[in-house]
Length: 404
Image 1 (spheres, helix red, strand yellow):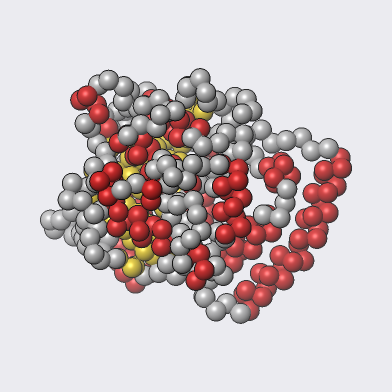
Image 2 (image 1 turned 135 degrees about the vertical axis):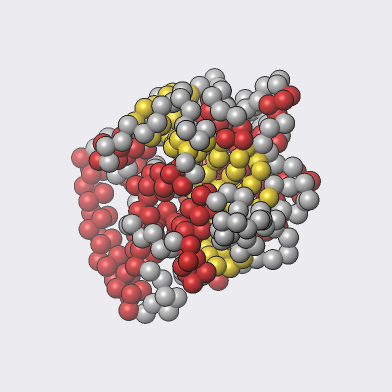
């Protein structure tokens, strides 16, 4: 493990030869990228948006870059957060977290709020960004977390965890547990909502599993206080969470040409992160119905696009999580013709009309007041978030149009 302080990573200093090699690779890749994007736009059989076509092709070109060269192009998560806070004139404070002697420090970023003061509502949103555990936080992650916190009328808190391969599994879990432990010193569990996308969604589910049954190498969130251990979080929101670390699901085949994630990219993720695939803290689908039947959260929303490769795994996990009458109130929403973490890419380009994005923000704004299609109920209606059983909510833009 490389000691890098409390940053997500330290961009390597490339030698002159490595810089020339990187420039050569980019020049070679550009014509191929232009060709692929033009081809997909002209023969757009799956009606993909331009942002999806762009991300799908640029991510596959980026996969061809050696890791040190790709990492040299990426700013640490904290640098991106600081820059965006300056751009939007937002208050920004940080706290370093001790995740245990075996793991490096992590950083909690408090956006436009006091780290120790309560928000007017008392609520706090803890956000874990995606990126396969190997890519730092992006503008889309920042904007989504801010919008989510505003809908929840909550403090916005971002975890800057150490990226792989500098830190491997279960290091990020230890840092996330430390983040939650800190927040629970200032908030009741019922005031805390955890959200994350992709790998961040995996991390959110890993924290839930850790609360249920602590990982043997990671310090528990609650230590000795039985009353605290019985408390439940307000809610957990997972956008396109990675629920498995294999590519066995059929959706890896039938959505291969549509999504921005591929089997090759999953191999890159796993080779750097090195999860123990049989452990529930890394692979939520490794848990049993009995295990997930008593998670410490009042409500859970799982979001997936019907055109993403993770969709079958997320569907299976939704069945698993909501199978018990004692389980959290669980909603699984499949967003028609949307791809992996579509909400993050939509908000990055100020497209607020995406299905996944609208469902996520409406759910946060109306926690506990959704109908069985995942939409806000009228003000005087009675109802709760539908418990997952034998139905699937597949939502389209027409379903959410009235809820903008």
